[in-house]
Length: 366
Image (cartoon, rainbow, N blue to C red; front, side):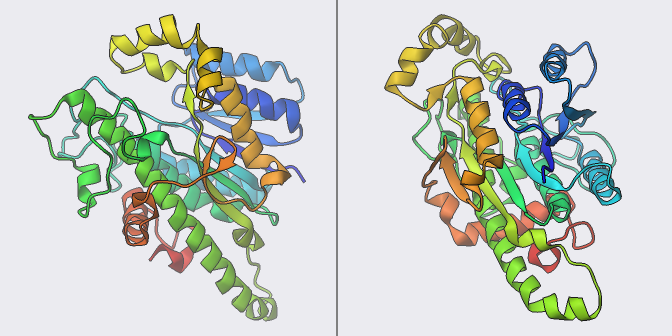
């Protein structure tokens, strides 16, 4: 049975063609689409609505969601979970964590508390956009609150990585990404006036992609462990006539490097003017040539189609781990460091405000 697909950042360069591909090839699924600005005045949201309008029978809803505001994210996730329980939406089949943020122009953006603009789990005040907060922590909150809302067939969590997570693989890198021993440095990075600020800004972006990739492994490990624990408890639950969620054992997570998107508006947003010029004069006109020479350089439409295939095509059922395009790949050595995965798993849940009370993962948070 076709379920529900949740896509964040649904009016993005990759997401709009992904939505079109889904509606064209996987009719019957219900789409929950989040955007930062749902007003008609937002040209990208208007494009999303125009895309959906091409499919008169589409079952979609667009929701305004600021991923930099964690209390709002948790409230939204709770509402979605309730709506699945009451039957407003079918059970989830996939969560596609597409939304992201970067700013290569500015210095470290600090909140009043001195944190990089990522999170304030204990306050109800909205937060400005941030790198780690939007790219990683908000999605941790969504995923962990909603794993219990998948159907009995399970499904896929698609997280977005990048070649930037692997030191030395991205041409914009000036300082290599790393997960520091003191994880607080991820949310409260030290300013370094001796280093070039554009390079530090890209490092923060790359660090977020490294964190996403590392956390993906920890999530898969916990889901597998939860499934084992559920199997052991099944007999007791049946005796007590207590319902359990059979989907946890069938949910898998992937971290996808979608490639370098030559037409992405990210190259024109919060970036040096030279990147926008390079895109207009070189990358887009010569896109097919670049793709022939470097297959990972491609269009948003091609990448968007791949994302949907990875999320919904039965061919990829049960797949987990790191992917480049649609091929299983090896992520960076640091992302595969199990001790760092464990530390990041625990801290990410705390940063996101997730406890055993608001996730089906229960004791797996430890």
